Length: 220
Image 1 (cartoon, rainbow, N blue to C red):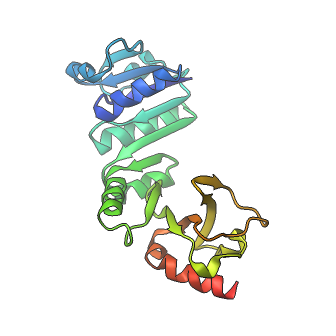
Image 2: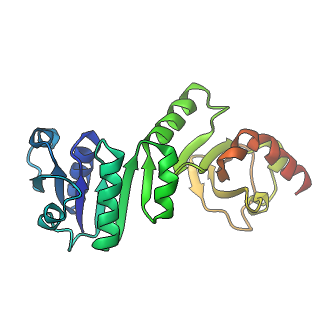
Image 3: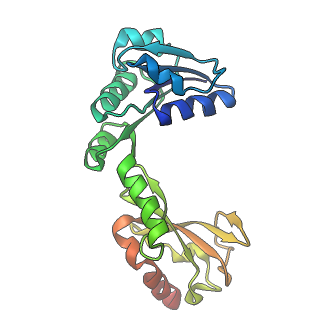
């Protein structure tokens, strides 16, 4: 597929290399010609100097044929404006924008723009390393209101169906890892001692997940 990358910083340049290694074609746009020095030598993709939200620049980049657009400049406004132009005017199927302000990310989500809230994601990863028992986020979904948390299966859940541990509207077991091999649970998959439960959960409930799982296991 053809992907347009708006912004040639560390993220944009890495995206360009990764996408091209997977045999996708890429065009990278940046207003600063020196930014292209970050690109891997020998990159085949096109580079264009200009503003990422300029329609003439976008059309030169091949946006009418593009199947994906990534807005990863160092400015929220440029990312959102260019992402909206790509999605609403050119109807690019896959559009994502990097957002530094997590409060704004929720607004753009409602506009149908997928966002990566950089500060929230980075904070989650650092917290997970510093105090993993208090910040069990393994993966942050979109604006961070839902996370994937990984917890050792409490003894109270052993022998119970993993599917029966779900609590509607609060969390859902999306995978069970056993000896390093993950499985998507069905009604026949019972929890065993040593299993790791990967759970999609509302962020506000994550702090008390382990204790609540014990209760569900006791009454399940």
